[in-house]
Image 1: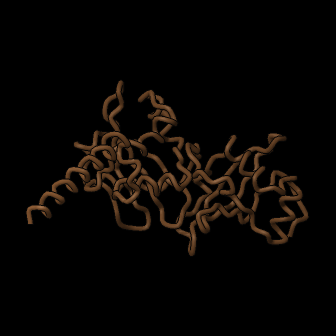
Image 2: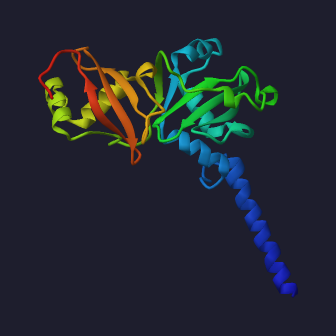
Image 3: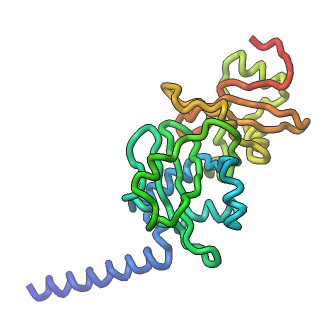
Length: 241
């Protein structure tokens, strides 16, 4: 019996040391099974967008795009003040910045959508109302600046229908990687043409400029963790049918 208790103590000491390294040295980032990290990873697996209505607040708070994304590395998920039910979940995440103090953010998670919007909370997490997250809605107007793409080289694929292929040929954009490169360079979300309520999957609308500086729009859905472009909006007339 004494031998068993001694082994149990050694196990407990080893387990405690392991937890110390995980929580304090790796800041929980190695524990994808923790609830907070599972939530953060669900955002990092999507295209994170800052609505233009929030750009002024970002500048006023002297934050960069990198600062906002870093919130998902070492920020604290406030579960009891998050909207965890419904078609669009909204999580409150707070981060303590060295020179700016604590800043709180709402990250949206619309069902079956590849977009996650970032909205600034008006107050720190301690003072945020429990109902505040439920008041955060998906944007329906204006544009959204893209802050982050999932780490997937082949994130975008294009519908292979005759109509869409004709559109690609007219644009001179046959390769999906070339399209993705342009979207990463100057792409944005047009919320006025994005429809979260469409079923079976929400329809998002991306806008980007090609190498000729022509503005090109495209409808897209989230399919098997990839962005599926289903149609283009051409800057000129075409014979595609």
